[in-house]
Structures are given as C-alpha cells and as structure tokens.
Length: 274
Image (cartoon, rainbow, N blue to C red; front, side, top):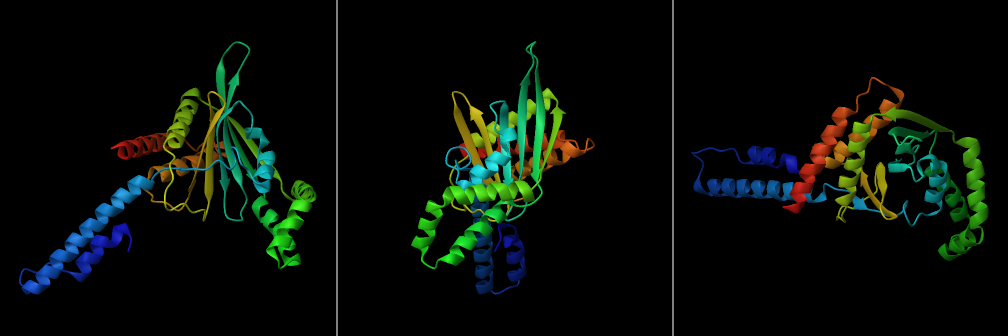
C-alpha cells in the first residue's frame, strides 16, 4: 500500500458508524490507528530519503563507459565549469548540463549555460559490445580475461564507432548572474545533503550531480527520476529539465524552477537536521 492510499483504504474497509457492534468499533479504532501510524512512518521515511546519494563514479572512479562519456562531454569538464549534471536514461540518449563561469580581462564575471545532448545511447552501444564478448564464452572467468586482455582494443573500437554513429548537440546560452549564483547555491545545498539511503536503486533515469570545491575537492551525488512529486529531488530534476528546454527556447523561464528547487531543498535540509 502506498503512503497516500492508507486513509482511503481505511475509509473503505471501516466506515464510521456509531451503531456498529463493539467488536466492529474495536476493529475500526485499530484500523484508524494503523493508518495514522503508517502515514507517520511514510512521512518520516520520505523526509529521510529526500536527498542525493553520494556517488563518486564520474568524479573519481569511472569505468570504461563513464570515461568514454566524460570524453564526449569534455566541454563541461573544465575548471571553469562550476556545476554540472550528467543525465543517463536506461538505454536512451544521454545528456549533460554545465554552468560555465567566465572572467574577462577587466575582472567582470559572466555565466554561460551549456547543454549537451547525444543523438543515441552510448550506454546501449557499450552493452552491445559486452554482449558480443559474453556470447563468445560461457565461463565468466574467460570473459573477464578476454576483456582485460583486449580492453584497449575494445575501447578504441567503441570510440571509433561512437564518432561515426552518435552525433553531439551542444547548446550554449548566456545566463544572468543572479540565476547562475542561485543555481550554484542549489547544487551546493543538494550535494552537501547527500547521504546513503536504503532505496539505492539505479532504475529509470539517473542524474549525476557534481561540483568542484576548494581546495581541489569534488562533491558528487546521484538520484533517480522515480520520486515523489512534492519532494526536493523532484523539484531539482524539474529544474534540470527547465534548464535543458530554456537553452533552445527563450520563452522557457527558469526563475520559477530555481525558486521551487531552492525552497524545497532548504525545507528538506531543515527536516534532516531536526
């Protein structure tokens, strides 16, 4: 039963009728107490899980696929990109967003929004190559040895194939300083709150957030799209979607999405510290 159907289920099974027998009243009271307890449990669980999960893969321990994707997204892997997110759907085309900080010769600071989208899935391409190796050997150890022995060759084949089969669309757009500063603050709040949680799944669309901090440190965290519409994480992902759309369409306003994400993240932070 979901957290939001508990009361409706209680009402259906136990209509309040003052003329019911005492045994039925006892069952009614028990069902009501159970429903209230369940809702309280769900509210606490939701508050505790409404945050990113620490994940250093793209930041410090990438595998071959992640190294390849980082190479394709190298436009946002520069010291001047102060915040970024990589979006990885399940076997659909990946994407990325970066906030670029610019300093001109006169010391003026400006910001650029960078949105990168692939034409098809790099993850699917890598999986196809691994499947070919798996079909060659039934023994898992032989698969592993073959992969390790031919790792460079396989990687170069994938790079060549990706260059021929996957196109990269890069959109860059100036963003006002106020919005950029708020976005950086949102990234920092979300990443500062990153913590392990039990429902650590990777189904659906995964969003890998990261930013560099002084001195030479990296904050990183991940979340999935399958989350409560009223959560801070959902507001954060709506913001990512708004940023992506705004790069192509000037009519898309990002200020409301920024304010919503900021409010919910701050509220989630307060609930975590209480």
